[in-house]
Image (cartoon, rainbow, N blue to C red; front, top):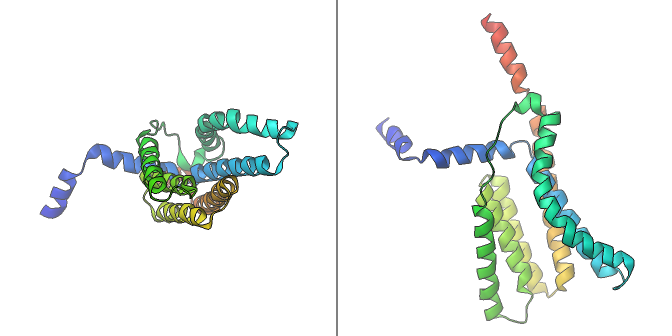
Length: 216
């Protein structure tokens, strides 16, 4: 009992609150689904750039979409997740005004990726270490966001995939299309499985109504 009390006392309340909020944020799988669709969209545009004739109208449109729409999607996808929850999952999750997610994981992921790129580029300058750095960035970002088993597995796959694509000597654009497409598919499938399991659970409002009726 004393050990338990001391452990609770030593726990940072702010850190515990952040972990609980992040767990609640990811419990319905919607963030993973939107992230997966985002990565698949990027992979499709990168691959389209590879196969379309340079200088053609279609090629220019793909370049413009990749440059202009990607920042808009980065800002719009979190809003889309909130809208979907309010529109379709309000009865299950209730109304929760969540605090904005910290940008610290993104900054740390970028720093880790840059350091990895510099290290690998110095050790073997003839390889496309940008692929490994991108895999390390996504893996590190995934772990910093959530440390549940499915996120840890995704992080490991991201790092291994980036390193493997680098060692195979694949062309840089094709490598990025494969990397982001594969990670997007994994994220989409994982989020879909989580969402289906979440939808099978009884709604919180139904449980609360049943408890109030039983108490009456």
